[in-house]
Length: 348
Ligand SMILES: [Zn+2]
Image (cartoon, rainbow, N blue to C red; front, side, top):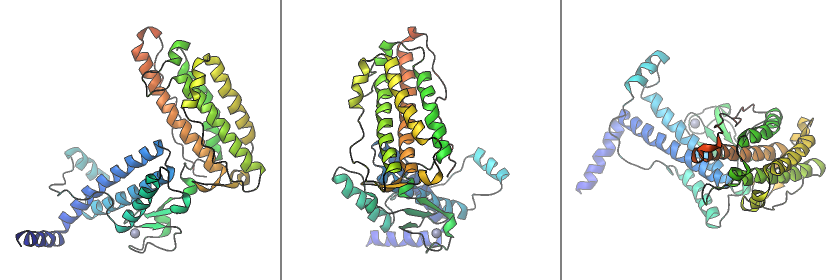
């Protein structure tokens, strides 16, 4: 009885104290936002792209809920006041620990689908997770098609954030795609500059591949992408081969080759890829095919897939170069800054 009365009082306190309720919502929503965001990054690392898309949508929903509470608290004022508030450090006061993720029934339903897929050792298929739309005002999530304003807060469709299957790999358009693909080889040459063959074959530890293996792996992936691009361009609505992309382990052969040979392999495949893509019309970039996991995809989707993969490995390689040089002070090489092109999202 005592506990129940306490709970009752607590609930009444929350209901009659909107500030406390909003502070609670802000704190828990913010934490949920970050948690989902980090889980999305990890899912992407594990190549679970649809589950990553789900986490991204849930993260945006929690951000909207937290933002709504933050505004209700009156904590968004003029920029001058916000700068002053930032200096003094925002204080939210006491909040009680509570669920920060899996809060709504729908979020839990979506997560249950992801759980089933993971228990079968795979990503969610596009057929199991429709396009998701998150209301940026209240965080309501809508699956499939967005029809009309938010059913909860009447926010217009234009103010929703979309997490579409076909954009799950990124939203770079043809111009940004070509710019990225054209400059990777230079980035790779910069990364290996000043390192001898011995260092380039070295594995810093069991879990870290050598730079040669990583460059070889990028060459393998480029070839896979080009096969798929060719199918999309030259055949009608192809089903893309489910053949799993070459793993990093299969790139071990590159470790015994001189760096010039590894770079040549990369140069050859990338040149052919650029020749295939150069001058394509918008219609060509939108040619579609079917992929078992990603559902309906187009050439833009596949190019974004290649770039997101390449970009992640370039970051990894910059770190390896840095660590190799730190471990081997006699190399005389210096670390390089900013070899990785960061997202210039032009939409498309
Ligand atoms: Zn809404």
